[in-house]
Length: 469
Image (tube, helix red, strand yellow):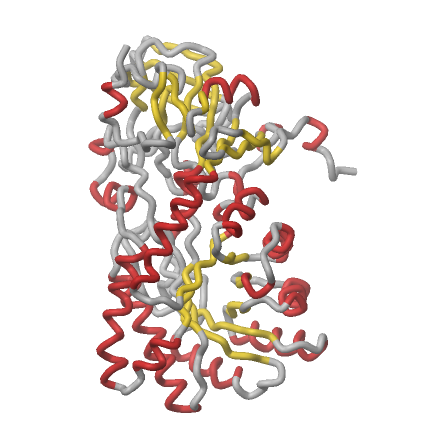
């Protein structure tokens, strides 16, 4: 049996995801053996792929050397992932006191940490200020007042950034757009200017460090970034003209996309808009070049090119760092045929308890039979997870074209075979639930030399009631 079918498939990544002896191998390690040794479901994390993705993102420095990358830890805040990210030389973005705790525990210095969040508690604000983090991104005039009060009480000066919402839309999923006026995030341009002036009134308590816009996740085009960067640049110039104050940074957020459709097997079953979003190939370098070019002429005309050159630009990539660096291995636990519809079913031990975006956004993750990866995947299966919920399926339950109608696997699927769900690193582990009393899975970290390290032990039943009285 040859690997010709698989070698022509887009899912394969040389040196990382490859077929060998009809099994999927991850950095040379047999995925089926991993499933046997560590049980399933199992998260398999590639440390080399994380490093590769970070190196790709850092290519944006070609267009602006003063670039600060902060990994959006909400995408995957496993300590082992955070440590690989830190060792790769970039910083981190957190959204809560818990994520701040994790970042510090993973070894990030306070000046490597920025904090977002739209409903921060006084305790979280105090923890961030006491730690001396790079900046607190403020979401409202009220939050600025709260930071002033906490800073005065400590007493310690707070570094703050104002999060702007400027009516910028994208072609991503509606729930992933965060710069529209209808979004719950940020403040309007008029409010932002009032907040900037207010922040400068108490320099002993507040260091106004920057402006921030996040256009959303999985953004396929550069235009929203251009609009966001231009809006922040105009505010920066206005503030400098009005007060002489120089902002230290502009934060253009995250949203650099991942190509979830490297393998085109199901592309025709997904709507055109969904294909454009899921198959997006915009790079950080392309985005940065477009954004810088858009404001360079304005900076030159205003005699403010030095402000642009001295400015640190912050980016918050999450998905682009971790999505394709993780594979979920799940075992076929049941197969059945329904004669009335002539449909074959494959039931696995991983569902939306591990991949919540499948039901939140009808997100597509490519599925492979890791036990027979070199065979032609031309049989149609209704594939579903183990949960007692009719929505726990891997196909288009709603008829809206977000997901394919079936999944293509080799014919004659058998109980015990291992299915690999690719590109499952972002918003899976950090959102997983113990619904139906299913303990959280183990996670292993694989290195380029094939070494395997358990970085999260599998929970047991006792863990399900650990904090109950």
